[in-house]
Length: 342
Image 1: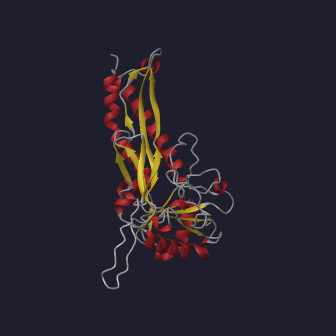
Image 2: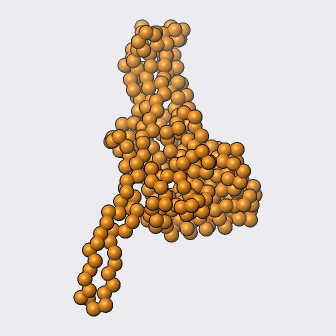
Image 3: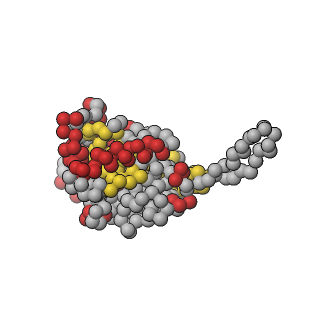
């Protein structure tokens, strides 16, 4: 008996939530963003708009006698940071030939399940690669944390000192120089000088102090490391190493702590091959009140029903994603770079 589109579709729908949860858990940035409020949902719109304060609303009047006139000169303090949505889709296809060669409903369902898991794994790798390193060849419209390469003009975490002359990437179409440092578009940085054993811990403490002093809300909750950076940090800790709670470990990410932040490694952190000599991104310090992933409420890896493909013997379903990485305050986030060597 031929297996119906409805049965194949219900199979996808039934395993979709579990597959999405696993996808999030296997990607450190997505896992912690989901746990710590770093993911927001929106219902629509042509663009994502985030209002940023670019000036002061009013001026202060000093009172000597109390009879001085109060200045009522005010101005609009907000400028909209605008982000284009990133949309992508990946199909799950099964042909009539495959159905006939794999007799029985269970065999066909297992093929569909395996292909869905394969597609989810591909999406996981590419989403993570683009967010962390910015070098995906297919998800090029999705934003990235990596602001180091000369080829990017929009990556969030730059290696230059936090002034307009040295951090020039735009944020949501806004020049960083438009917003005073108090407005929060200059990320903090530390150059470990290829001597993590000498400078690394000092840099981590300095970054924590600088981001904490400039964070309007929250604090750094995730330190995303390269494999070398993670190993160097663990080597620096020795007997002082401590692990975070069991729930985090069960999420699939081996995690140790720095202050109140979890320290997790990611294989896609951009090394010198990607960023250039002396510019390897060793650690991202992320405050999820400053950097968020916005997703469409109906486009978070949404699965469509199976349909026959006209002119072929195949039928397919689609996995659709619509979202974007956005920055509300980069002064509360930081980059430690050039720390791959202990």
